[in-house]
Image 1 (cartoon, rainbow over the protein chains, first blue to last red):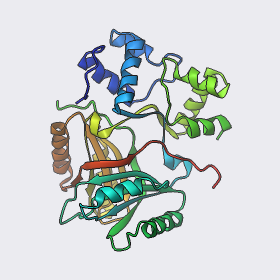
Image 2 (image 1 turned 90 degrees about the horizontal axis):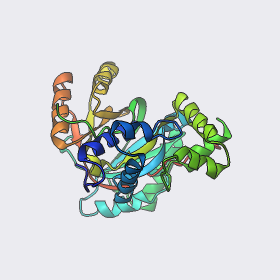
Image 3 (image 1 turned 135 degrees about the vertical axis):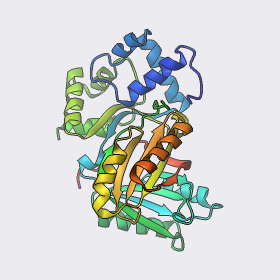
Length: 169
Length: 150
């Protein structure tokens, strides 16, 4: 599923690099070194691929991945909207520009149980503050007539990066 | 939290450049030693604040993924959540205040594998999840702005 093939590493080497990176870089002077040995390639070849993936957008960002709960951001709201398919792109693009919204996606509805197609995440330290921000967003974008729900999280059971290397056994 | 740790969180969720010695590069930028950086990152890891230092992959380009939700009876929520957590394909799993009270994200190399895992989970817990795959991302996880003052 890797879109562009990098000719410096075989597909298998690229998959193993991805699996390695998904767990984070080791906290040591030359973090790519051990893996380069295992993959029988050079550190530089691995780095080149990582940089290429970044340019291609396969890697969205690279750096510290933080658990926001541990920093006092306990009020994590998922706001879901049922927006006419004709307008969902337009509204999604506008909401994505709201600084308090950290994620904004269009997802498939699953009617009749689930009519909502636009999902936004808002993280805050207090529930009331998050609710006020949602009210302001509704007013700013004239969404008063759009059905929506706010789902606050109340427990984190798991939070880590995706493992795209997992295949059918 | 130490000033250096806060600075790392504020400034280095998105690196503009990755090198063979990324910690040395950060150290140079902040005029401290590489071991200061490595120690600070280790401290953040030990305190469960840092999930990892590494990439966030684009979900759509990197493989297959979906959001899923279950409506579970309150007294069984912890047990069901634990069962769901056992699958390595599940990377986020939260309880939320709603009739659909358990929300998790699944990722895998391809759609076939994802479907197989969803079927396994459904059979395992005896409940059928809502499956809500992404159609379009307007804004995804570029970094998380931290307000240190409030």
